[in-house]
Amino acid sequence: MSQASPKIEVRRVHELKDVAANIARDLKQCRGAGTALVISQRPAVALSVICKSWARLKREVAVDKARTLNRRRREEFDAQLTRMEWTEFTATDLEHFADVYVVEPSKATDIVPLAAIICIATPMSDLDIKKLLRKPMPEVVVIRYVTDQDALRDRGQHDT
Image (cartoon, rainbow, N blue to C red; front, side, top):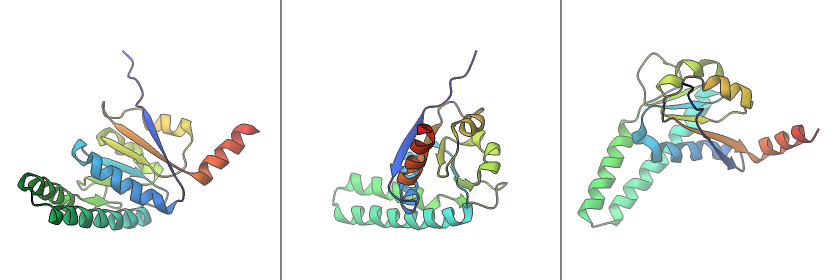
């Protein structure tokens, strides 16, 4: 019985700096799904920018909580804030448990089987992605971020 390859969602962003904010937003929406893997050429830099965007999202949730008097909504915001505050990120200690691993492509294959969410934030060929996704979790969500520059470059390669 062959396993179908996961569907890859493509998110187009205008500039490279927008990728981290989009990743943080997507992680916030999918946080309950399980472990996340972010693939980046410069994991330490990506981690720093993602954490900054994550902190901004936590402030937005806190503001939303402060704006409502509805007790049920406030409890939902409290639960969301607690989950966000306890989310652990790492780019260096891949042996240590984390909720979000940020790694370069060469180190991603070890974490793919654990990941419920995979964010590809670096240009990778379709063949490399297919190799990477040989043994993913059954219900993995794969999001590929493409900048306008990447799209133009890819279009130019296909035209030749």
